[in-house]
Image 1 (cartoon, protein in one colour):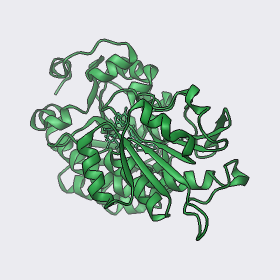
Image 2 (cartoon, rainbow, N blue to C red):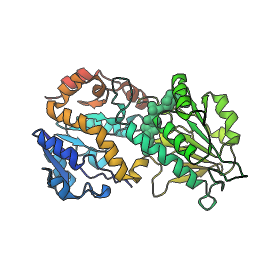
Image 3 (cartoon, rainbow, N blue to C red):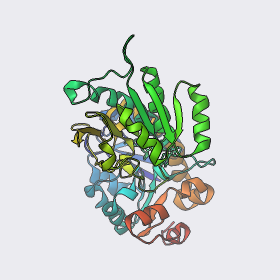
Image 4 (cartoon, rainbow, N blue to C red):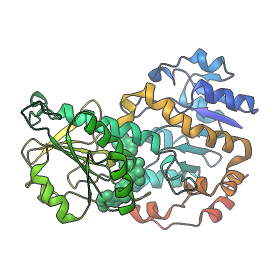
Length: 375
Ligand SMILES: NC(=O)c1ccc[n+]([C@@H]2O[C@H](COP(=O)([O-])OP(=O)(O)OC[C@H]3O[C@@H](n4cnc5c(N)ncnc54)[C@H](O)[C@@H]3O)[C@@H](O)[C@H]2O)c1
């Protein structure tokens, strides 16, 4: 198969979807790899490192999309990239379509088979291709939140860990999955006072053991959240309902319960945001204020640390890329039920029900849609 790796063009995005190690695996398996000139630069990977493992460097994105049968990317395609997709393409990348009706319609119109990293599941129902970036984003969430609490940046002016004789800041994490647990561990490492809220009691049990009593775990009811809001300095929103638009766990009205210049970090912003007042921001301009509360809502947080994130992501995606290349999309999804759950759009149809529901479209059975895709 011919695999294409374009340069990421989303603002402040420096990751790349394939490393020289991945190139080697694909080339050794008999495939052809086409990398756009400079695609690895943001992650400190030079073109020659790809060439040394058997890749061909192409001058621009048009050439990569023109040559390749499968496009591997990091972030959701931007409009200029959607315009390059054709029915013969398999696209393998993050899509987060529940929050983006326009992109969903664009991908459907392209006719391409679009597999979303974030809805691929493993045999235990976990999200193996979201997890590595959630680990990164969780860790960044606390460090960004701590920074934004500094007075010159518009924050309350409180140090997360306090000092002897002065109390630590209160950090509230809503959603105790991969992001939430990592955010909580960094907050604990910074010696903040930490409480984690989730609706899954089994998950709260696991967290309670993992934290060894150093953080509180609480059931996330509207009332329990509301009771905590007047106390908190930093809230990290990290809820996820697989593939669906994020539920709002803090409303605009509830902001009035919080201390002025407290900070909200909405990691779930890529699924539409879990605070009513959230809207996507960028690393260049990461925050804005609503009713005296600082909002940090960067939709590609791991993009800021590409040297960590590119390798963490590709360690997880590479086996799937190799499998798709070896047997093609039809056999790959037939052999791996978790990968099949990643197919969000195929042959002009939306094939992932929570996305279809969120964007007001009709979903079509994935096998039926794929039967219209030429092998
Ligand atoms: N902004 C970014 O750069 C970035 C990067 C990585 C991940 N994310 C996003 O972060 C979010 C969390 O990802 P994750 O990997 O931790 O997911 P996860 O599935 O591991 O965890 C989500 C948790 O939310 C809990 N939850 C669901 N609904 C809830 C509710 N109403 N109240 C409280 N808890 C609730 C679930 O029980 C689960 O424990 C996702 O939307 C993901 O796409 C964003």
